[in-house]
Image 1: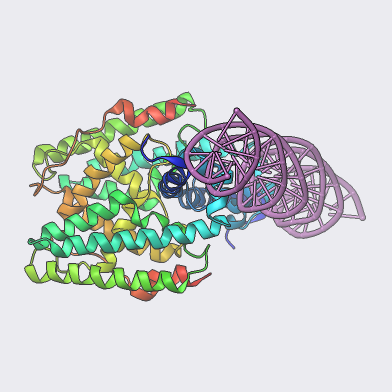
Image 2 (image 1 turned 180 degrees about the horizontal axis):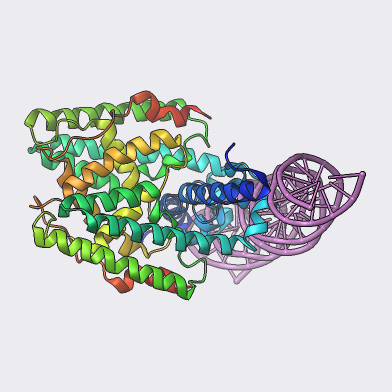
Length: 207
Length: 207
DNA sequence: AAATCAACGGAGCGAATCGCTCCGTTCAAT
DNA sequence: ATTGAACGGAGCGATTCGCTCCGTTGATTT
């Protein structure tokens, strides 16, 4: 074991708890029990409630963290020289981390001001990433940043029935297919209207 | 109202019940309550239990029906002149119907002999559809029939947080992207190994 | 070595929700 | 007017939930 003393153990447990919570919510949805989370993290329920007063508080903290991770991934993507590699890397990172897996929490928890701010910053970065790819002509013209957000939301969900390793392998293959479909030029135009920002975030406003 | 008498109402209710059950399970997973299903169908709980002795029996019946619908979609696809149109139509039909949305039931209900038979027939038809697309050179060479099954499983899940109409519109746009990514020639090879039949159906064997 | 105490795991509480039963009501057919 | 099949939903016991509380552990201090 690394780290010495109870404080180090507490820090480790906090990490384990957050990772486990994200995976369990991603697989089972917002209704997952705190016992399932604590069990997967390998810690007691008491240790969970010493850090987060309620299940809801844990969920809010999880949302902020996930959006911050997404912003960092977007910054890495913008730092890449190649516009396509940057965008694909951003999408891959977010899907691997499970950024969009917390979408089922929308409407179930109040959205703090900090959450809106973090979301706004992440959206701006993602918009720049997408705009750059459009200008470089590597991203199909009829796809929007919100389409990509929905795509990541879809791919973020974990299978509730398969082993995590298998699930991850499957997801990477399917994501590679979707990424190929995102490249310009498009073979078949996208049907319907692109999603609007308002309808995208509406579920979060219904608290 | 169409139909006269109590028998007609019963037949209508049975349809409403099955449609509602598929949608609710697709959105909320296997843990969805029977009250939620009856409520969405607009019928009483008593009417549900007059037709299905247990929740489990309803789920099994739902699985058989979904797989039969998938087989019919595959037959329509094989009847199409164009190999790509046939495959794309099959995938689109299955996703629209929600064939793969019952995957979360795997491991939660015993698999009847009839379910295995129906599944086997559906798989044979899908294999032929995929093989024909491969031979015609319209489907990227590194994708297998099981990859496509997993893709349909992914796209079959309904959003638990958005209105069904919006969710459907989003899903069709994202599916169009994925279908573009399935076309030959591939721009980027798929990572990892293709899934095996054994690992694909393993969750169903763990009853 | 003894004392201290922060962090630990989990048994168990009341509340909520579950699958399912049971029964009074409705209404087309007799 | 009578029948009876199909109806909706209140409510049962069982289960599961979020959460509290407490005895235990072990690094640190005296």
